[in-house]
Length: 540
Picture 1 (cartoon, rainbow, N blue to C red):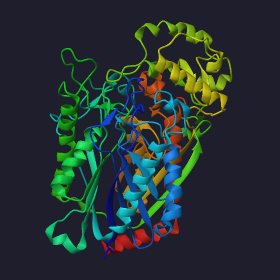
Picture 2 (picture 1 turned 30 degrees about the vertical axis):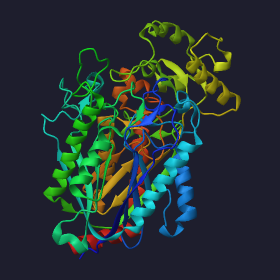
Picture 3 (picture 1 turned 90 degrees about the horizontal axis):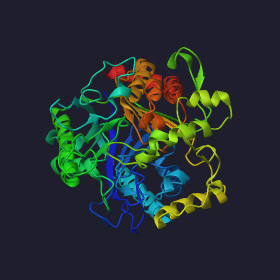
Picture 4 (picture 1 turned 120 degrees about the vertical axis):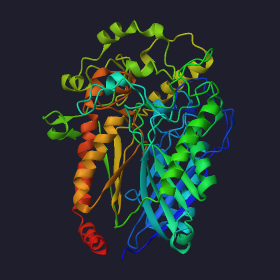
């Protein structure tokens, strides 16, 4: 018979004490946090199988930065060494609110509109994440772990594909003009019931994954806010008890905003008031997680296994069968014009800059032709890996212009970082991580994967781990670091916002697929995994 896991959940506040920093997500100079409308939390799940542990964290942040990841792992090694935690078995993710603090990244591009690095913000986040993990480990008791999933009904206004034309380019989708259908409407969840209270159905915690941007709150907001996923967690914790975390899936092209309201700019949620829209969307997510738990799900049985690897994604290779039949590679990071022009729910630079397109094509660097082919047809505005702007070099070479004070602060910040040789502007050495808990696998990636990109990751991992008895694969985005979007090669060709924000070129997704396949094979070939899977089948 399957020995119960030791499972615990923890929660800790990560709201920074300071105010006045820019918020991370929309990249708007005026999107400043002057107050906090809601607290921000880190929630952790600790699972031990008698041999080893795994920890999953969901933080109310836009993304996890390398600074956060490094500091959390260092603190765990120093203060909680007996837990046996490392990069291999700790998954740090963010629920992607765009109304969380900025200033916790060491990458210049993500500090530009904050502006700068805020040590007190990083310290509050790291302390809260570590506290949540410690609380989860301390609360661990023999428990049954269960998995369940359910799709949102079509009339549930919870999520919409915001890039239908790019989505329709994919060879493995049925083209649709309905934004409700061009996405993954399935929520996936893991939850635990302590053995001692199993007869009462007591739930100690639930972690769920569903792909929809946490952008119900827009950039005209000036208060820290946990957005729709925070309200979902609030509802589920009130109804189920314990800790409830609402993590992200492949949300790159998925939005909660599909309405236009009179006299209110941008695409919004169901209501003109953003907080009301966030509550509404969160109530749908929270209710779905409660429904899944109350249906009962299926026991998760088997052993824990994990693998982690950091890859230089500026020169990573992609296996031919995962690309277009040829071996491909990525290129140093570049960010395209469409990224700076924003989306329907988040404004970018003024539209009068569109005519600059022709000039930028002429200015585009005449460097390595192979790299240019990998990035084509992107119109490059910023070479993120090399730290070059507009194809003509660093900002110190640009003319001094009369700019508003806060814009000048942004430009000064970038120039100061250049002077200190702080490069690259966005990271390119990036982590891929795969965790297996019995018959459930979690693939964690450091970016915003589109719907189809995430689906392809789950398919590759599922095929490789099928022999181990893995029946469910969860995709977890915004994990362990962050470097923009990841589209499919077909979507990349459209060079919409998401493709322009895929820093490392057309073959970024196939390179990630190759890396995940390697991790899956590494886990599948671990002797302990094969022994434990035989024991699992014997128990069944």
